[in-house]
Image (cartoon, rainbow, N blue to C red):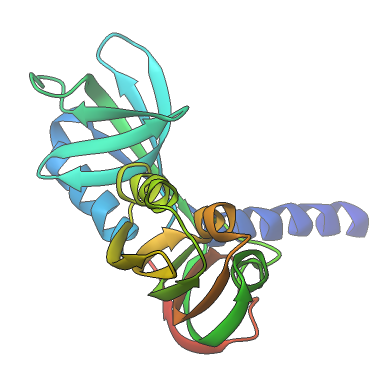
Length: 222
């Protein structure tokens, strides 16, 4: 009997843990404005947001939230951007009957002190063991013959494939200065891994718990 009670207790604790670390919000397609506002509020706070849409035709489409403009929700599905509207939408590509907004954990905002090294060393040190997303905002000084094409590719990924942006402050034959705003750290590692960089700024880690040895500035919840 005690074993049975213990088993039930473990299951209850596990379910509570799932509820604490994962949240799902449901909206009918006609509530597109409410869904868009909720999703946007999470996105700007640093959460990684998944959108699950049941369309008026009965399809289920799952994507990562990219941006929100008015009542239009933009999501990325397998690298392609789609727009989501209500059941009577005329401009959007997907007509939603039901929208689920899924997000996890909290957002831990850290201060990143000045760091100098290769892009792989500097930005690789900003990846925690467990996370849902890791975004970086800050000034980045790049030494060497970094090409306009490479910076352009990084800017495109940041500006059009995620909620973030890259501003090009300076680009010469000796290097470049750029400003990142909530750019996924993985993009910075990929494009700047072989260049010497100097940077400082802010790190947004969406995770279940604090897991970086950096100065913690804020903990954001939904």
